[in-house]
Amino acid sequence: MNRNVAIVHFNTPELTEACILSIRKHGGGDYAVYIFDNSDERPFIKKMPGVKILDNTKGQIIDFDKELEKYPEKDESLGCAKGCHFGSDKHMMSVQKLWELIPDGFLLLDSDILIRRSVDHMFMEDECAAGYISHCSGPKRRERFLPMILWINVPMCVKGGAKFFDPDRSWSLHKGADDRRNGWDTGATLLSDIRRLKPQCHGRKVDIRNLIFHYGNGSWIRNDLAQQTLWLKQHRDLWQSEDKEREKYYTVLTYIFNGYERVHEIQQKDPDAEYILVTDDPKLKSKTWKVVFDDSLKKLSAFDKCYHVRFHPFLYAKTDIVVRIDGSIQVNKSLEKIVNDFDGYDRCLMIHPRRNTMKEEYDVWVNTRGYPKEQADKCLGFMKRMGYDMKLQGLYQGCFEILRKNEVNRNINDIVYDFLRYLGDGKIERLDQTITSFVINHLFQDLKVMPVSENLVTNSPLMTWYLHNSFTPIPDDKEKIEPYLFNKPVKTKEYGVEK
Ligand SMILES: [Mn+2]
Image (tube, rainbow, N blue to C red):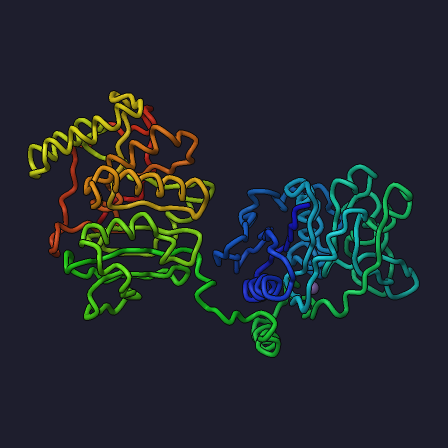
């Protein structure tokens, strides 16, 4: 059974983040977290491993304005329509929507709780729902589930006909009660359905008092940031990570060996990124890069060192995403946008702007860069013997890529690195972008590729590509050919023109 956790978020990023960190630290499992973000002022933008944001900040998933027309009978003076606390319109519709978006079921958490110990036992395969059950106060006492931490077994609920939100019934539970504000009592709907539908459904009462600390009313429209911050500080041990590095979302990785390039300092950093520069020069200093001096490479030539880093990026990066750039590329701005766009892809490749077959590329290297003709023939012969169609179009640049840490990328890198060693006769063959393109085209056509154009480094605000060992930018090439990926024309993602 999947261990899914869902949090409905509304303007309290500090609480939500701490909640996630606490479940990571004490929750007893590697849970997949979904954030349903209804914020109108303070969305949840922090990128965290294993956390998926369902962005409803602009009504992309549920348009609440329309829902207000549908269910006009609300006590808006109390902010029920605007806030997102339990019982509010936004909360109950969001949870019902989560039933569709996470059909395996999920552990619903309030954004304003901190997990104190393992909640793994809350994921109950044989229970329709499981959580704390309380009475409403006042004359219309009625038992209901509280949503602070509530297991919802969606397949079982759906099968048994149980609902979370039922506009015909849940509203009436409180309507007319003079001792409390009006609101949807979704927890009571769920519990009464479950009891009515027995024995098909079961709902288990769980004592949650030892599992969580609850701030209370965190997503209420009148939430108080100073108070929340104080509360979080008081419970710091529950959520603060001992290893700060783990909190980064992606790594920008570069390398300079044998003094081959100048250090291009980062002009603007993304706080969610770690910036690592690997070098063999113990004297190399940088104000902006975290310099990693790798002594283990000292037996390798300068080229071999480069390739060692290129094809083993996760030896250096602790994150699941790496943006790998050559030492000649300068980062000008946060790469947040491009990393966000990378969601759902395995690898981001830069399509070569001028050539798209292997033969053309080797010809240029032989004719203009002193690359040995025999070596070109050897590499091309190798590809042919492997059954490669030499007319196939698709050539990708080696100076930039984004990789997700997964099986397919590890396989690609291992195979390319082996081929480079084989073709280099003990050393490492130096023209690697052809071999990488060949391996990807020939063996990994299922790879989910996000294609970008060279504009990203020659004509966008994000990065600047400099001529070797200089501070002179490489001029933008206006005569780019049509981009191809896996022998098909492809549309590259573009990141704006440099002003
Ligand atoms: Mn709460």
